[in-house]
Image (cartoon, helix red, strand yellow):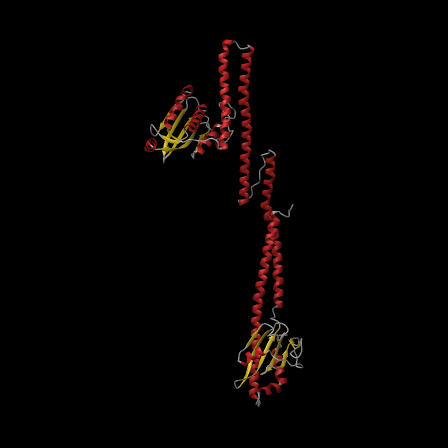
Length: 507
């Protein structure tokens, strides 16, 4: 269905406007060229006629025994009129006439419909021998000086309408004796212009029809994916994230459709993770709260003997700490996203921090009989970062590596420096991460262990928080893994040389 403000109508309006402008410019250009060509050709024709008449008159006068040129012009009326008529026969709009030295017009030939201004009265009349006409004084003055006259107007009011006129003076023994005029009221291009205009108009109409069809199919091809996107967005608004757009071709619209589908996939994944997060949070809230409530009720009701109170209070304390960690993670996310969590970079020994984390997890490492390796380029390597925030990231990665390591597998922490950047890597052998899950590891609410078989305490926020903290300090974090074999998390920090550290301490 077409809309008056739709893309199709906008394209067509723009195209039609361009076509009208081009047609107008083309028509005007052709008219100017044709008129200029017609005027030049007509002037040349009139010049030939006037010169032929002048040559004939001079030869005829020389061949006869006249002693006065004006007497010759007046006496040879029949011969001269026939001459003018014959020279005008090829152009029905051409008129020729002779004038004497005082500008009086005599002897006519050619077109019988030429209007001239009647010098004896106000108004105009048809050129003819029964009337007497006189040239404008300025025109006659130019001819007396021996100059030719060429004009494309009404010759200073002599003609009623515009004429192309050419005049050549006649001299007898160096004395001005009269002039020959050849004039035409038309360039002869009217019919040609009319034909060309009709041809151009017809061509433009065919082009417009072809353009209408082409624009329709082009706009339909471009607009169709946009309409599909509009429908998909409405589905998204209703919570349906499974709508997709067909990608056809490789142009910009196809790229937009492809990007839209990628966005839809991200929204779908985010929605899946949100639902998973809600389910996990609900489980992680409900389980400890049920445990706490049940044990407290048992203690109050006396169902639990006094000698066992300490044991069950210890369980309750552990569940409270679990709830505290969950609430702390949620608050952390809220503060990070609101930009309220501030980081204070300090210079400290990252190797020492790594050793402390290993020592704090020594019992868990021994319980799994892991082959622990700790590698540093130097015994002490200093970085500029927020120590507490990096400890949170470092500990979280190491904790996950222990949790998902296979019993007796390799567990390695390596710290290296290259080009002023310190690389901290934590490697473990175990289940690893499936390839399709790697792009989402650092997303909110994501849990690789969807069965919660090993990750019973996490809610899928640790890696998201880790990435947010690292990126806030201008560094990077990434993961590499081979499913069922191994996994390695790596993050970077700004390294500080010992000399820089010493100078900083001195200052």
